[in-house]
Length: 435
Image 1: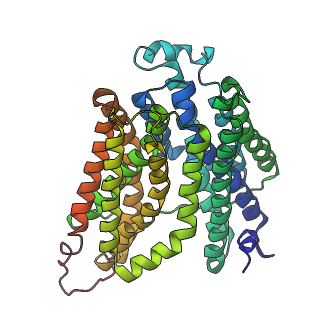
Image 2: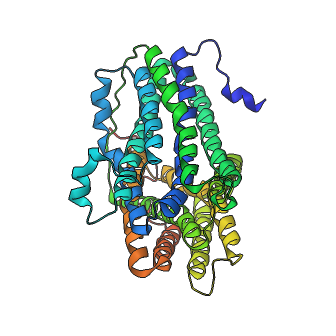
Image 3: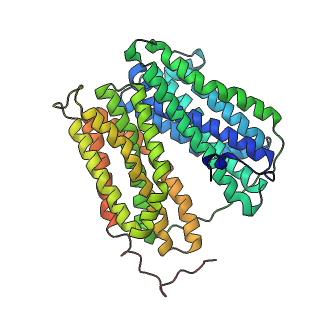
């Protein structure tokens, strides 16, 4: 089967679905480009420290709190039209990011109110990051809802898989663009002035989203909204599941975002190298995910978890050592760290063990509920951990921030040794559907 078959829909597919797939490519293209460039932009151009960078990441994730906005919008706007609007909004946020270092008269009251606590650039980036996150977060929600009620139930999984392929291609394209432009027009090369580089980058990322998003919105037709309700079942026997979920999400944030921030801060790595980290990370996840699933099935979730968290402890230990003064700016250690951050993607493949192991002792109702809780705990970690890590970095140095990641990894490792022994509390040893 050709890899291009993943991007082809058959004749029975609703045209709205095909449009949603193309918009998915654009949405993830823009989000990936922003994600892999924001670290260099924040540190090298805006001169944000780790705490202010953490504020930007935290505000970026608070968009998940405002899910009610989408419910309101869908009462007046069809889902297919809203998808185009959200993509155009994401493109607008990307363009605005290029102007984050300038004062905006429209926000003068905000500058006056919080300017003594954080920089103007931090406030601007936080607002634009929030707008981008709101757009992409609820683009996915709206798109998935559209797919579910615009396709036959037997064909839904196929359509979702094809749309996922468009999303993955968009993500890889965004990372590739940043890496390519970062190497070709690196500020160090002198070929392209630093002050114009990000105007070019965010223009290339944002303009297609604005134009195509607006055109798609104008051509969109109405679609019926779909509402789903999931029962929440929170029980003490899932404590280990909750611990693993929250702390794994936390150590991922510290490793990926603050690890890359460290490379820019201490070693001044160019946007090309940082983009390459994200590109390799994405490629490893894509090509090795089937192998990771096979390993989890053959070796068991408990063993794969242990391997995953041992590797995390080792990786954080290397980062802590690299933070010491005897490792200077020109040390080859920066290339070791670059490889570690890229390879870290292979360990995150085993994070699915957290979601799969509860199937051995949870009822179907409990499984559905706790997968929703899994998502919520991830969101909470993304809001709390960036600003906490940034504060630790400022107060005690980067080694303290990475020590926090090592502690989280150690906690998860300890829990991974006891995840099965704690769940032998059913009366008959079987799993029974509730309700």
